[in-house]
Image 1 (tube, rainbow, N blue to C red):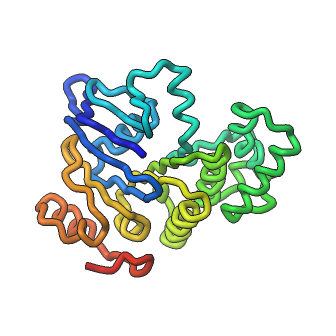
Image 2 (image 1 turned 90 degrees about the vertical axis):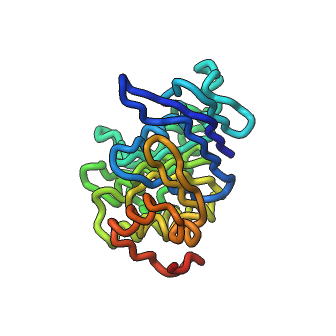
Length: 253
């Protein structure tokens, strides 16, 4: 689905991505972890084409997106949905208007069809009947659910999640983890998740990739990853006092 090949990106004298290679498998949840400031969000922005690398290639299916013109790039972006860290809702719009926004911008659906689609999406994320509420009336977890409904509005093949549980309490974090797994199963999406939340990571991931000093130093299923010989990975896991949740076929190491 997605291949990053020898990706390089610097901001001034700071090299953020250093000949980075990564393959993201179709239909799986890949979680990219790493210390704060390692460039995880920068990497996510490259995948969706919001940033262009200094060197290297980004393949989405059979399209190498770093050389595409804006119109061609926008066609590829239609394959993506994105849930931003703070949900990035329009505060002046209602919940229904937020979810409807991409449908009005990018489709020719009638208003009656848009209303039906919005109602269906909100029901899928557990927010049935909230179309008239304003973002200011919602909790952090509810705002993220609205953001996910909007991200799914155009039936994307790939959904990118940027720190989806930041600022949430443990109960809501668990709910968001379940929602990501349910979304993958119901919609058949490929999910790419940026996170520093290790319990979440080990609950939802099919593959875990570790970003360190501009490179992916390891990518593996959760059990293999937790048993890595890498001193860097073991220090990271131990520092987080990792407790891997049981269930979903992801046993404790």
